[in-house]
Amino acid sequence: MKIYKEKFQQGSRCDTPSLGETPPSPPPGERDGVKGCFMEKQTERGFVATMEFIALLTIMVLLATANARALYHLHREVRVLEQQQIKRLKASETNAVATVHFNATTADSK
Image 1 (spheres, rainbow, N blue to C red):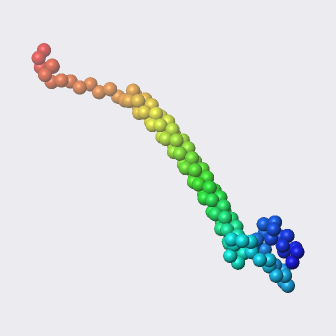
Image 2 (image 1 turned 180 degrees about the horizontal axis):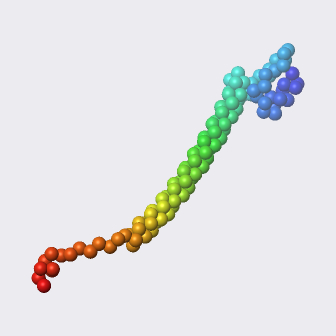
Image 3 (image 1 turned 90 degrees about the horizontal axis):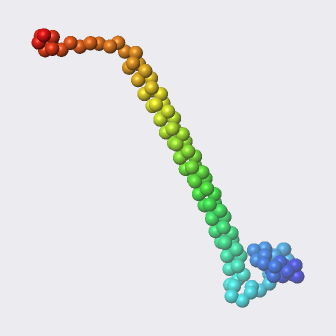
């Protein structure tokens, strides 16, 4: 019983007594000694839920950042390809065969 009282006073409210030991009376304000144990478990669950939420939020931010970076690089690559195509099309324009068009009205007037 002495060991259980020491554990109880140290804040280990959720420990069950060993076989043959009787639990001490609960502190004032705690009904059946369950309130403290319940609050500890609920607080622990709240902490775990908060940590899980922060971890998920961090993963989402990392994915959004990676997505934005990939879109930036793709946009830059498309711009480079567009400039290469414009250069290629301008180069083929200068190599084209020149055609001469005669205006019928200017030839008849002379």
